[in-house]
Length: 194
Image (cartoon, rainbow, N blue to C red):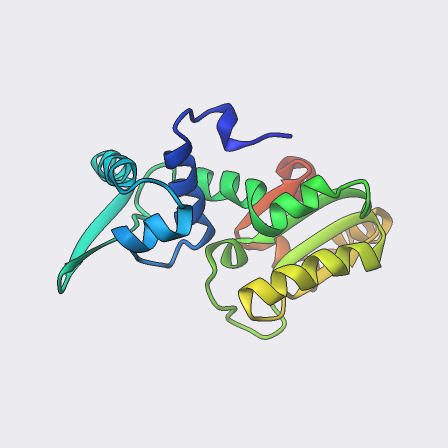
């Protein structure tokens, strides 16, 4: 299975990237980070400094603490967000249990879901699954993520035939999903949208 270890050699940096990009709206102070990722404070400080120098993180003093948070302006922000979405949380569970949940052709998360921002509308979809899916298996994975996040995940499942039919007919519901930002977990974006 693909992992950030394949391209990044520092295990502390991997844990930092997973922490920050799994919760992209959060701010963390050094001791809180050390508790979260269970690594030595000096190694954490060193890699935080490197990530800040690279322009990935910003730091902000508040009281007697220094808080770190992601810079959305970082050129590879979206790429790293996508990579971490596939290697942690629900994305990782979906990939690891792909055979259990059936034969999905495409699984995508909305950009809002990946960034942990609120939906604009109640009917907005967080996740689109296209293919032959075993719903109880998928629902189990989604319920586990819902309990971690503390809110309901809005998802839609379609067979490949229904998806192709709706796309051909320019179904407003499906076009609304495809018009938004997304992170592909399974499948190729070109084939999904094209």
